[in-house]
Length: 113
Length: 234
Image (tube, rainbow over all chains, first blue to last red; front, top):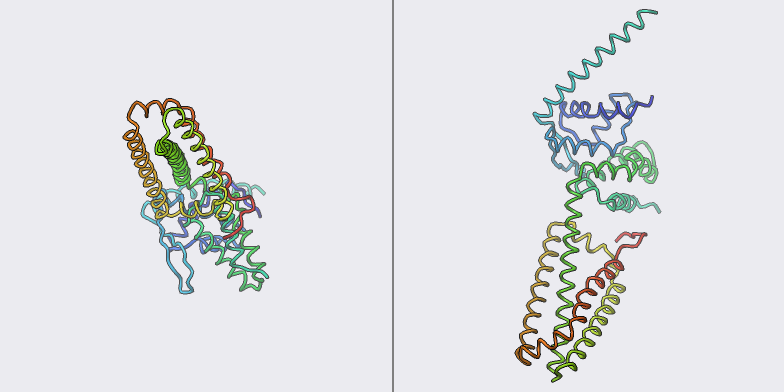
């Protein structure tokens, strides 16, 4: 199923913030997690994640640090900040509100049949 | 023979040429590419296949560059201002150099014992010839060294490079100005203020011509040094 661009864009930030609130991570791992969570349905263009991450960092919601893995690969790890957690909670509330409203409408429909 | 390192470097260069990502951005994307390639190789793809799939998944370089441009606005502006500043400095240095060339010519004329219109004519002709020789010298240098534009952007990328460029430019300008002042003083000392004023009056056009032509020569030189469309790797 192809997801509309707007929906992907809108859900990107709460998704990234939620994944980071599970623990520190780096770009590639975040993409793989999204992939796993959506059973492969959400296919972000990998590279587009990074401008989003940088924007979040500029807004002070996350911070980054370079680390070198045992295999010698340097990766930029991101960590959610307090402001990020606050923003996430706000977005979560918004999504849950919208979701609840939609669910009520859709549940109603199935009841009629 | 498929050379993974070379292909990755080429891919990085394509993105880097768009001038919208800084080194950290490129490192991060390259690291991602590497991770994806490793994963794909584990699944059994060849190096070449893994690279192609990974690069495709990472996204179209034009679109990526555009997205990064939105996030790196201030960085890009600072880069543009830096290049503009360099241009202004270079122009100024070129004019300083042209002025010194002109003063050398006058000094030479005076030193040879010439006076009046002979001195001015000799000085003017000599200055033009000297400028012409410098043009030829620049052409030879540019043709010989194949550093077409790569050297400048490589140096200008690091902070250390920027400082070196700036210091060199400033030192050059101060040195040239100092030389100019010394030459003028020597001429005035040799022939007196009145004679000096005469020479200056009769060489006004040539002097202004030297001043105007110097930045033009510099521009032609820089245009000649621009990287060709087929930007080959170092």
